[in-house]
Image (cartoon, rainbow, N blue to C red; front, side, top):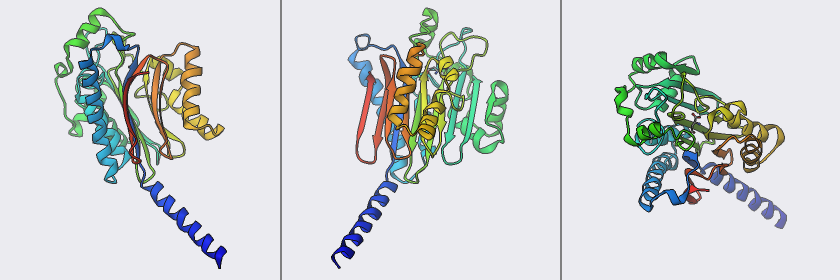
Amino acid sequence: MKSFKAILSFIVLILLANSLLAQSWSIVLHGGAGGMKKENFTQEQIDSYQAELLKALEKGKNILANGGTSLDAVEQVVRYLEDCPLFNAGKGAVFNHDGKNELDAAIMEGKNLMAGAIAGVGDIKNPISTARLVMEKSVHVMMVGRGASDFARSMGAEMVDSSYFFTQPRWNDLQKVLSKEKMGTVGCVALDIHGNLAAATSTGGMTNKRYNRVGDAPIIGAGTYANNATCAVSATGHGEFFIRYTVAHDISALMEYKGLSLVDAVNLVINSKLEKVDGRGGVIAVDKNGNICMDMNTSGMFRAYEKSTGEKGVGIFK
Ligand code: ASP
């Protein structure tokens, strides 16, 4: 009788743990990695970056805590950051060599490996939402340039004049050609209570870029990846390296095929593989159990996270 009771309470405990686990969610966002140093920031600047990161986080948290999907959460968080001129995505995007803004974005769902991306657009207010339209309303994964804009227009996406993206600080950056210092891509990864992962990344690319250069952000497996079997990843940094080292997919593959934990997989890719070749940047990631990771081989990365357990944080410097 005693052992029957013990078994019964064990089963009840397992069921309880399972239902708690099913209710859990996690979200991480970034606002770009780079060579930022604390001494170059005023306290006011630090406060305003952190305040915007936390406002974006709140958007995603509200969706996830109310049972919404990770896909909606990552899209809405990235939209918020695209509208915020502090970050290099949407309004506030960096300028290319010709003084124009060319935006890239991608979104991916871990449950079915569906993905959508756009690159090199200069008239779509929220590139991340058009990336989602590409995923959901077209048979393609990626559209670029004028075609992507035509598609966005046909879908009723909000279009803007290219002057909408102008911000004085980014213009000054181009004039100074501070290309290496200016990052600020935005991204978000999330796990929802349904057990689904999603990732989204949006960027203006790198200051002073030429020849319709496209970075890693809209490349599935490079700057953006989500797979319910492993993790969701959004990257920021020197895009050429992230494409060559297929960073986001490599992290997922190390977990899937080598059984590495999320933290170990990210550490190996960011602090060993990329570090060796001087590939600068960082990633945010969440695994299928809600574990999170935010790691960089730069001196800083704008970032924030929150979990259903109540854990929460925001940071800029390493
Ligand atoms: N990864 C982006 C790119 O290379 C830039 C960044 O994250 O700042 O386009």
